Image 1 (tube, rainbow, N blue to C red):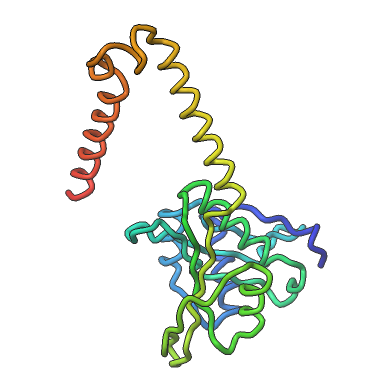
Image 2: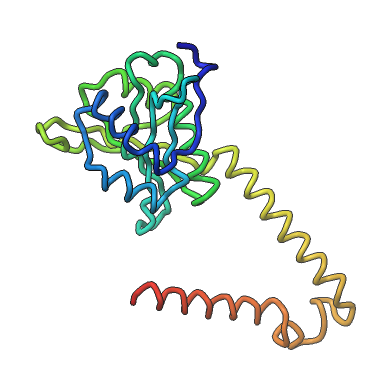
Length: 220
């Protein structure tokens, strides 16, 4: 096998059985098929597969967002690569794809994962290659009572996040220039009360109302 012959792409529903088979071949932590469905219907952007030249799935990453937390952050549920395709950098490529979409689609602040204390190869990948740090140790986390490292990686300096920030700053600057150039009457963009007649303030209020309506709908 050669790395260049393996394609990383987003998973589709029809990939889930093969992903489950890959999981069973690689890991002691196994899941019912409905758990894979739950992930792909909730966070379709965060499941990726590694596919060889014969279209066989040889690895996958399955992740989710923890959006109820104070900071929006991603969590890696499961990562696996078949033994026949290891040492090709596929785990790194899969993880980077998941991290990219956490930032791009969900504006994640950081990503977390659990790893067995005895799994030195995985720990090395996360800490040395991917830049994760141990946040905590969770005692008896696994079904066989083994401890887990709770590891985290800060995504606030992710290159994609920087690009998104620059685009947002540029947009804010453009909007400001338009409003300043459009109102010549006063230094602050027109006489008092102008913005409240249909300017930025009213727009912000209408957005807040929309948000409140959405939140009410969520609670039902």
